[in-house]
Image (cartoon, rainbow, N blue to C red; front, side, top):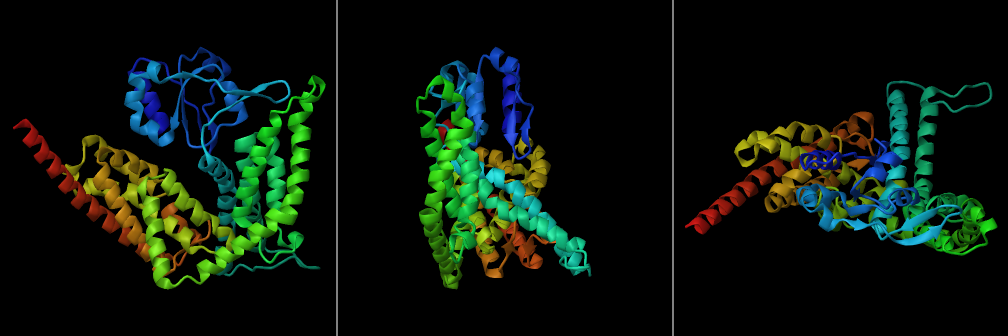
Length: 462
């Protein structure tokens, strides 16, 4: 949506526009060196921190740097004031052995965390789907046979084991990419190794693994350590060794020992206490927390509040607690789907552009992408966000009360059919309740909002 907005608004303003996206599908429409060189302006709409390579690419260009959500909201204003908003890309130089990287303040902790999550998602999605297929095969009578002497493993068992590997690598990959987001490629391998160590109870001698907490701590620490090491001035004949030898070796040595003796056991203890606490929370308190998580997920549709609730819920999957991620599976679908359906139920409340966008919003929203709801919220923030938050909170309570569990990310409304969300009936009840309430709230709140605005306009004209 942001890429389309930049291209459409830019071309309307008379510019030749080239847009590169870096998302779940990797880098698409990659900008060439010549295109960057010839560019008069560069817009960096960022949902995560920039890599060292990207910092080098845009060195010396006039850029406008902002978040993805702000880019979507303010693109008209940005295009109208490009020269005023653009600044030359300049920051502290860091030698990486023959090339220079630019370090900026882009992102913050949450952007680094989401970089790790983005890298880990394909592992857990692919693994979850394979495990679901193996489970479905077993439910239809396929044997679940382990390999043994004179006995070949069954397909269902093999699929389940391969899928389980995705889950085992999910947390180490996240730790590695958090570190890479901060400290570049030299930080990746050390953080991966140490995160894997922190999640190996047999090696650590702990009763539980350090989980996502360990990966986050290790990723942040190693990432900043690697960044600091890059600033060390070495003789020219040794500079080439910094990135691929010195930083990885020193980082693994120091943080490997720290992980084994301190970080791993401490983080594992904290995770064990957290899991124990969540399992023993009184039902009434759990429902209150479920309302809060649901409301946060629906509040800013992919923004920092949504990401905080999402991260909390997703981080518990590796510990075997699935109810909180079940809320994510329900609530993240509601804002876009409800907005789309509301345009059909009460079309007079929406502009022609909003009505035209209803089908894409419904289809994309049904596959767990909340962002299509953003344009509707921007057009009428108070009624739309209020409706989303209230319906999301209630749907979170219903989901928790019915025991909806989501085992891994998937494809939205179809997850129960793939065995990724159980029980299926409870999921669809929670989703249906939240959707109906969200639509009703949108119609009530937006009708009142429009009437109040019309009255205010009439009063101003008088």
